[in-house]
Length: 424
Image (tube, rainbow, N blue to C red; front, side, top):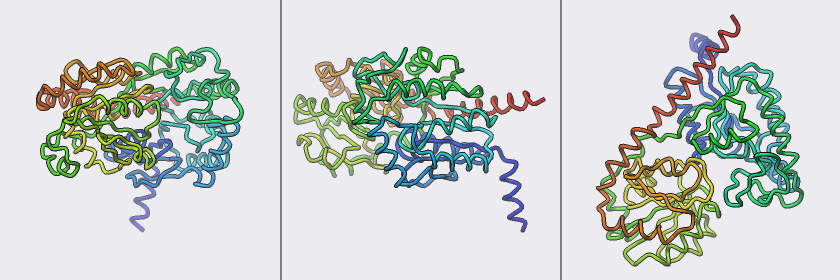
């Protein structure tokens, strides 16, 4: 009886945080939401994460939005009718019922695309629920008619009106109709229907784009992504993993991605493999079985892993982390590498360049493998130890998860206090 009463009082009076994201405790955005949830719990909050797919454990209470069957149906509808974000009606109604049941003090949105959510239904409810909303922007989908990024095709239609989308067949792919114009105007209407929302871009680059978009009138607060520095740190003893892959005396170049598509530069890694010498090896993490089959011999390919310890070992043993991304916001992989003491080479892409400084990394133009080779030769002429302290120090100063995500709670408290004051 006493325990039940305690749980009832705890549910009623603790501050409650609800986060909504495509995935839970998986990939970069899922891990960010998980870490924010863990910090909420450590502060005495109740933490809830509503998500669209995946079966990862979480310290927060989880709520699956929809099912595998509804996910497949939403994918099919989007493939045919360019309707990503406008399907999942039943699943979204159930989410709204869940929100009404738990009565969160803050709703924190992350990635809303991924075939699991109906933005029309969700934002209609959010516009009337009188709950402060924070939306962390991880890509450009919120202000385009279709795509998540547009750098590769150098498209600026999103500034005025999306139409005849040049990336219709890119994620979220559609192979039949082009409704990018309709989607653009519907998003403009829907996303501008809420008064109590604060946007959180995770890079200055994205913040600048938002000011040029139809979301420009909303308040913004820049908060960089962070990493757990107790998990990501330079591991000294990596000899066993080097022996396992027969790379003891090699210069190691590392690439990591959740999905290796054209925007992540897989083809450039293939080209680079033909330029490096026999004392240099490339390791790529996150490849599919099909991609593994076609790799050159001097590339060690690994499938996607949730084994963080293995990932930390790979970051730590590498001489250079390569990010050949052609479109990106603020890649978490860059700061994971820095936290493990490894310098970063990134293409001059989006907010990716914001993570490195002159003593912790290198920035080259997209596709400029000649300059990439110049950097690799420079790295080979320096001991890895000469970069470790600077990289680790930058991660501690700027990308400590505890510091960055504390900024969210300062924002949460500010918005909750403003709501209370408005009632007086």
